[in-house]
Image (cartoon, rainbow, N blue to C red):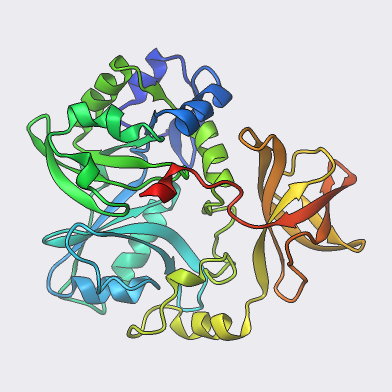
Length: 363
């Protein structure tokens, strides 16, 4: 039985095409992936991301536990600040990537939907070494909406009794929504300016209805993937997994050397100095063809890596992709590689990431 978010009936009313997404029955598109994509790039759209998992860590040992779990440095966070970080195993491989919210009384970890059971088991196991920390699965407490696009603030503001202009990128504020406490942060996964709202399931449905009534476009997972790929954001299961370290995935900025011991620290700092086994690259097809997950990458006739994500970019009108090459391979911008697309070797060139910078960088 697939799990459903509080907005399941709303998706059905809109005629959404629903698919199994990590055990959740989620919309892949409403009317058109391209139209939904364009709404976010040029205006504003709203996503149901209520399938994401929420883990609360509280108690006197909370900071020590979170610092042990993640490679980024949580200690410097001020109340209501948000941090992106990988969650690693002792061998440096990636359990998941997540957001850490520093709340007044606790830390809120927002994890990928299909990883929630695995993450929770891992975190609880690690917490045995920190008996003063309490770990709670709070996923059912929250619905979550992402309001994204250059016009996100104008669209959301009428429904929020707080000046959204005062929220900086990767900061949050507690608000009241439908008479209940809620959290709004200036975060997102599209490369555009935007906000994510965590509220009770009932308040989430009401806010969704209000936004759509005000003309905000509903946007589903198909467009979300195109948006995140143009911004070169890693997707767990594609660019990140249990055989990949944050260093290899181009996330070295999240691996801190000036903090105490944490899972994977020794391996990650060694890779930071000496390199990993593979490295994430971005490429643009010279010969037309859609690069898809798992397609082989060749250099000088030899298979050396594989594609992790690919598509035809609506913004750039080009076939783009992410993938891995050996760390020691030449990875200069402009280098030629070949992608095997349906049995044919097609020319591509390495390009600088991200492929596209949206309005997110203006805040």
